[in-house]
Image 1 (tube, rainbow, N blue to C red):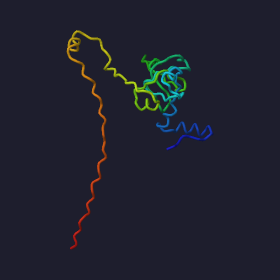
Image 2: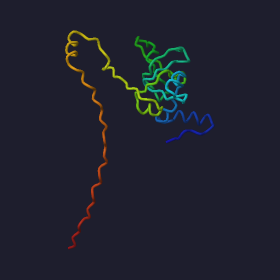
Image 3: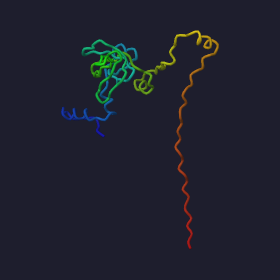
Image 4: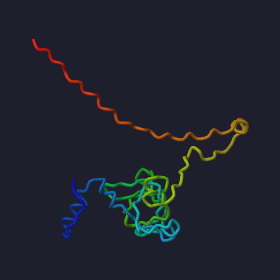
Length: 177
């Protein structure tokens, strides 16, 4: 497994980035944070790894000024896909355009991930599922909802895994005949 390249040769650095495994390519996908966001969250680091759900703004290219949520991150190519940056293919279907991470900056972070929030030393923001959002009430659904109280969401229990104890080895009894 290759470690981070320490060579000053451009050829060696290009070869390392091209042949790097995916878990190391994650470190190549950092983008700058908006100054207002850094001040609001009191984050001292200038760049943070881009994650699905972040809100970004495009700085370079034809789509300059467009902003939207990241819908996918491709570690192999180092590109991200934004929900508002689309183009039509020959059949008329709208597809997201891949954009290089270096051409965007982050305007809002997705802090629903506890590990990411802990790494940035920021409080976790709970993410609401789309199912929990309010839907327009109809006459058939309004009456039962008013009479019955809404059940509380069930919290996930932590799974405690215990290692199995090794079985005691009993000495074999030999019989001499």
